Image (cartoon, helix red, strand yellow):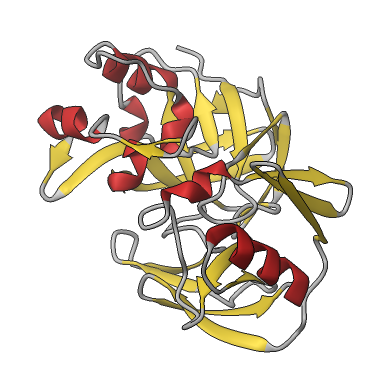
Length: 262
């Protein structure tokens, strides 16, 4: 079986909708512009779809050096390079993270849209958030993703799941960065090192999934599936696994259609 890249996604703002792209620049912290921004509450705690499913209904676009966000009938835009510069100390789970607020107007817009006070913040430098991987016994420089820089999923893993579901779901439920063609469900879990284009990747560990996969990105409604069904055949210890976390070993561009080389 020749594995090829079928889809690529970036998620500029943590927990908001993603953007499907034809190519992406792989960097140590994750794809360029992938989860470099996130929303924090008035206590500087990060917020996600787990508590606020409506975040899935905010749709970003990158046009030149601007990011625009559409939500219902409202639209807001800010510069990719824009920050207020004053460090804010936050966390992503247990990882201490230094971020900076983008600007007052953007924070005000999100606060109005969500109905509570919050700020849009950005991570600006490699090393501003470090994640200790007990699985790899190493410390990684990561953006604002949950734990690892990249998530890879094989197409057959979703097809196998959809055979068990009454209502089929799309790959966007699982928020992957890289979707590849595959012929055996979950074979990506056992990948070792591989290369896409000029970029070398290392498999870290299968990804444990949370309730966020039950939030339907089409409408922001939280359902019981697919987690209930995955629990019947993908539970290992206390984790329900779907997709695998990977890290890149060098910078470079990858494209849809590129082959995986082992």
